[in-house]
Image 1 (tube, chains in turn blue, brown):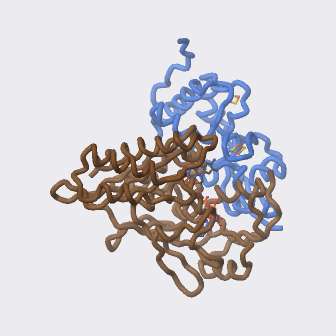
Image 2 (cartoon, chains in turn red, brown):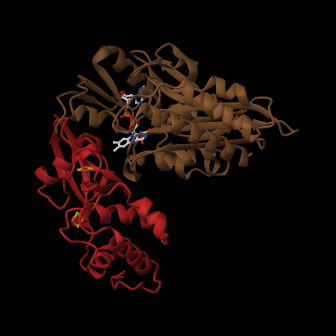
Image 3 (cartoon, chains in turn yellow, brown):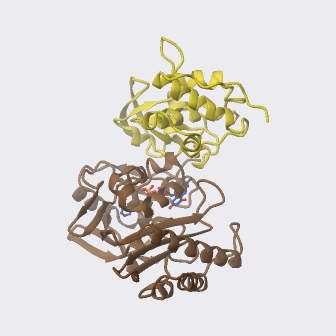
Length: 166
Length: 287
Ligand SMILES: Cc1cc2nc3c(=O)[nH]c(=O)nc-3n(C[C@H](O)[C@H](O)[C@H](O)COP(=O)(O)OP(=O)(O)OC[C@H]3O[C@@H](n4cnc5c(N)ncnc54)[C@H](O)[C@@H]3O)c2cc1C
Ligand code: FES
Ligand code: FES
């Protein structure tokens, strides 16, 4: 067993883990934070995406021991006492979820994307979330949600979140 | 899916890592980005008894031009290649390739050293290294040696990196204003391995003829393949459409792709031809 020390959403945590324990199981089972989902379990869908030291990571493909000394953000850490994170507001306003299974991973991936590129084009957003699958929405509203969050974070005018009917 | 049990160590120095690898023997594996290894361990295609995590060793991640070479540290992550100024300005082949390797989350972890050390002809960096004429630095407890990329791949998952050794760096001749590079792979969807991929590096003479050419092929051969006849077909020519077509035809003939879910052998040869032609033209346009 390995003793590890890490932060999740700003809170210090310690755990005693077997090396083969995956980070996603540490989060979901040891810490009972089930907002981080398991979809494919094969590094494809992005439902398990969390931030490790600000970098988006597929937690089904990281060992829990690798989290030693790291700062992890999960979907539970997005909202603050003041309210929703802009990305959460964007998803709400733009109807960017249906079943919601992909949503936590999608939002955390978007947070890193916007951190690096505060005003991404539609194409940059689509490439940026290319490691996250959504089986419900068809992605259009997710793109709008990310544009909305980017605008909100930059203090720019918010884009329309009315769905386009074609 | 949970890997089989193993022991884990994350040494802080290269010497400690080398000592542990020698001590644990052939059932130990190096953990770099983990994005080829951990999926294989989860599927139990791999079951190492020990993992030596080399992420805590400082100094293995860099991109720099020095002494006529571009040097890249083994632990340089895909995302660092994507975002590097010098790569974006000059080494377009990496920008082309990185965008098509896996997805952003995987690129946050996958390393160039791991991509090559994995020894899989489906990975994209081997062909890029072939086109650029790279050398691989392999380090063991007695020192380091440089191995040409042409002598690096032995077979499926086996390379010149022996037990107790670590791939520590890559170097390739620095490009100058007369060189252009390009990479493209046909993929069915994001995160898929190549149906066929082609890496090209062209250097021109002052008179507009081709001084040197490097062409590497991805996932159309048991080992990453240098398209030798194609290269020879370009050197010394004026790179006319006919010269390029001839080189592309040779590449299609000289690889040996498998029939599989990604397509028939015939289709893949056709794709090699088309992509080779396009990548040669793209590389020329970038000289
Ligand atoms: C969903 C998905 C899609 C992918 N798509 C692509 C793709 O399109 N193209 C592509 O090229 N790759 C792809 N990959 C693979 C990815 O790029 C890997 O990250 C890469 O192949 C291995 O790098 P790593 O640092 O993760 O190595 P690891 O997984 O840590 O290691 C791989 C192997 O190399 C050995 N090794 C690693 N580093 C060293 C070293 N420095 N010295 C000696 N041995 C070492 C390890 O022991 C192991 O056997 C994909 C991966 C996933 C999960
Ligand atoms: S559960 Fe991790 S990528 Fe799908
Ligand atoms: S909302 Fe159902 S998978 Fe995305």
